[in-house]
Length: 241
Image (cartoon, rainbow, N blue to C red):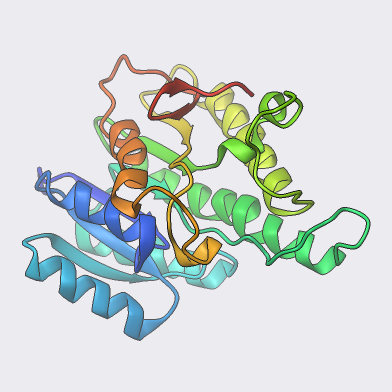
């Protein structure tokens, strides 16, 4: 197997995911660009390669079992293992999302992508991650999923969100459960918040750049072997649950 570090970033064709792929690629890693659409995915791969990144496309719909299984086979055939998985793909489900009016279908879609999709991809990639000397899993979350911040008077918690914010709370809880199960192994898994970045997820209303948002994922992807696991972090450090 190659000594080159192998990473997979889901939702990597644009925005924060693309910048995560670019940042990991700048370290000399081989980076799988996971994305659903063929044209956006291959366009991102070409752009990354032009910047000197060893990038390769991975057709991947995190809500589809067959797609995820095929992605795992592609990485196994290409590299024989996976060193880092960044679960970045996510949706808001659209706004507004007041609890009294939200369509249950919107909540299902948010959970399917933001939580179940992460579980689906993680479990499919775990056999490959277990072959790595220093496997890392990064789940891209959001501080809007922090119940402490949501219940702190005066805290900036974004708009009322019956689907998106709770899906990130759910993701954080799942991350903790993975860390508990994987304790005693060399797999470190953490949740990271990129901050309020200007991406099409929020209509480019954010105040941070996607490159700034990618920094926490890159830091968690490159943790030393004695680094934390089962935590929730942003650029400033630990985020309260």
